[in-house]
Length: 142
Image 1 (cartoon, rainbow, N blue to C red):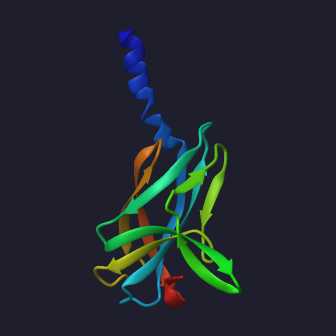
Image 2: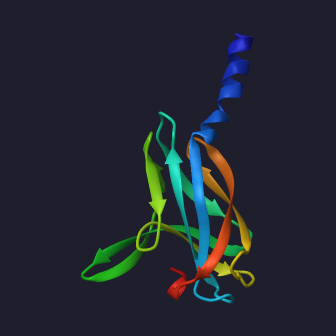
């Protein structure tokens, strides 16, 4: 029984390794913008679904998961209150005009090349630390 418990304890952290976070980037409208948008690709190489529940960083006052929807010919952001599901063997793309992370209340300027550490929290995998790299500027941080 003890060997089973040890094996289970060793296997549990591996769930975090089933998720691959690729190309985390942060875009802002200018180096002094107070809001930025985070983009990335999350790949689930495992056999179990997971859900991105939240993103946290010390670089901003708040970090929200958002999706973009078109309503009556107007693009609108909508909070992803239930998180973002990632199917087994699937991938989720955070990109302009779609899913993204809003970094609200950036605490200092974010010129290109700035590294912004953040923690992604998943329902199964738990916390995964990533570093967003600021790149170029775009209108409205998008």
